[in-house]
Structure formats: structure tokens, C-alpha cells
Amino acid sequence: MRKFVFGGAIAMAAAAAHAQSSVTLYGIVDVGLSYVNNAQTGRSSAGLRGAPQTALTDAHATGMSGSRWGLRGTEDLGGGLKALFVLENGFMINNGTLAQGGAEFGRQAYVGLSSATAGTVTAGRQYDPLVDAIQQFSAPYWAGYMSSHVGDVDNLANTSRINNAVKYTTPSFHGIKAGAMYSFGGVAGSQAQNQIWSLGISYSAGAFSLGAAYLNARNPNVSFYGNTPNKGPATVDNIGSLGSATTPQSSPAFAGYASANTLEIMGIGASYAFSRATVNAIVTNTRFDGLGSSSGPNPFGYKGNAAFTSAELGVRTMIAPTLTTGIAFDYTQRNSVSGDGGAKYMQLDFALDYLLSKRTDVYVLAAAQRATGHDSLGQPAVAAISGFTPSATGKQVGLRIGLRHKF
Image (cartoon, rainbow, N blue to C red; front, side, top):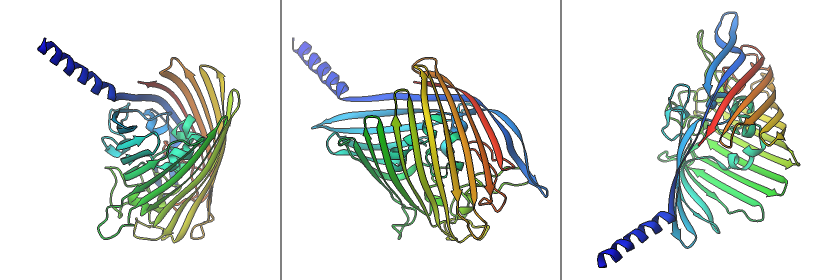
């Protein structure tokens, strides 16, 4: 009898412990066929060369959702307090390699404590409050990475996560929620070098939602753009590349601003949901301040500031319970830097998504971009739809047909 009671007590204790904690395995697999009408192949004395390109690619490049798998866990500590963690790996489905520059858990990796009344504190590699507060109002939220503003200059597609970060998020209070983050630079003798901080606030009431946020990154070439294993020190341009006779450029819109002392991104967005349609609007301003510092290379000798202002208007419509479509237009303008006259980028985005089941869908994405003026690489501005190789001209059209499965 004693053995039976003792064994039963152990079983009950194990069951209680199991009920108070959980670990969930989750993920997304997204693959598709992508086509772009003009992609750089290199350059010669006559200028940039380009050609059409078709490839089977992972969604990290141009699709709806980057392929990933992750572990999410919680433990009830009592008194309304919970411990939590997230470990999320990004990978390329077309070749099986790691995404996010080769980081094992490059998408997210954090641990923290959460209370329904006091909020949540987490520490590790995380999304910043700017993404939390305003990404939902931008086209990348529903039309994929290729719909982001040129080169994802304002990080609304979440190209850059934040390392070494402590983040606090408040509970929702009458529809209002706020967040704050600080990332330690980790440089001996300089608290400010490589530091990042961000604030965000959002409000939701019925059909209306609103959000605003700000991010400040010191030495962004290292702290913000250089935070994955494949990036280098301040002597390397971690934002993009000038290309060569046989290789294309990357991030031509702002790769030339790696010497900025500070990166500032601020934005405000809103949406209103009707019966079947949702209208989204967002405005952002991205500033590369203090050009010519020691934060990164400066081959063109830039000084002063480079500021990108982006405005976007989009609408999504549920045609049927299993079919959703959307269209968005965005306009980005950069000021004149060192007398180059500035640049302008206009882009039209389209998305069509059909649910085969609750976890599997097929989709079509399309984007067309036109660039004018001069970009950061000292050349006539070239179109550069996010995720595709930049065009050799001021125009570019991209198309993707994809299949996505969630588990």
C-alpha cells in the first residue's frame, strides 16, 4: 500500500510540473519560383550590365515568410509570474544552409520573465520595438520582403535583429501597449559605442489601430548591420557592396553610408478595418547621421547626413474566406548628399494569397520599382527591389509564385 501511495504521489507531482510548463516546436517552410526582368551581372567601362534572372529561392529573399523552426517555452513560477524563452532558427529551404548570416538562432534567441500585470522583460537577440509597433501597417507584413521600401532602409521587413538587448513590454491597457529596448555595445571604456536603443507605442480600438516608434543605433555599420557571423569589423562595409566587373552591387541605395556615426529610424502608421478590406498607411524617416566617422569605410568621402523619407498606402481585401489580395504604393525620397541631388524610388506592390488549408497556402507576389537621381554608390540610381539582385537600370520588375506551410 505504501509503495502504491508513494508511486501515486510521484506521478501526481510529475503531472503537476508538466501542467505548469510547456515547450512548443513550431515553424514555417516557404519556397517559390522568383523572376526578375533585370539583375546586375557586373560592370564594364560601358557601365552596369544586367540580364533577366529566374531562380528557386527561399522566402528570406523575396517571399512571404522566411523559412524557420523554433522552440518556444514557458514555466509558471506562481503568483502570476512566468519564465519564458524563444530559440528561433532561420534556414534556406532551397539549399539547407543557415539564414541570417550563418547564425544558428539568427531570427530570435532570448529568455525572460512575464507578468500579466507588470509586463514582460526579455534578454538576448530580439525584434526591436519599432518592428513591434509599426511593421503591421506596412506591406511587408502581408506582401512579403520584396514589398519593403528600397533595400528595407527602415527595417520594416525586420532585416536586422538586435543583439545583446534587454527589452521591456508593458501589458495592454485599454488598447495601449508600449515597449523599450536597450542593446549594450560591449566596448571597454565606451558605454555609447555600438549601443542601440528603441521605443515604441501602439493603440488598438475596434477597427482602428495606430503605432509610432523610434530607433537609435550608434556605429550602425557594426552594431546594426554587422550583427551576424558573416559580417566584419568597422573597416568593412557591412551594409552592401560596390560590386565588381563580375559581381553585382548590393544595397546601392544606402551602402555608401557605412561611415555614419548614428542611424535613426522613426515612423508612424495606422490602419482601419472595414467589413472585408483593411486600409494601411505608414510614414518613416531614416537618417544616416555624421557621415565620415570611423564607423565604416567612406570611399566617396561623404559628410553630413543622408535622410530617407518613405510614405506608403495599401489596402488588403478578403475576396473569399480562402482568398485574400492586396495592393500598395510606396514612395521614398532621399536628400542631396555632398551635392549629388538626391534620389527617388517609387514602387507598386501586389499580393494574392489562397489558403489550401489552415496551415498551407499558395501565393503570387509582384513588385515594380522606378528609381531616379543618384544613389549612394556615386552612380545614376538603379532600381533595387528588396531580395532581388539590383537592376542595371532605373527600372525593375519582380515576380514570385510560392508555396508556404506552417507547423
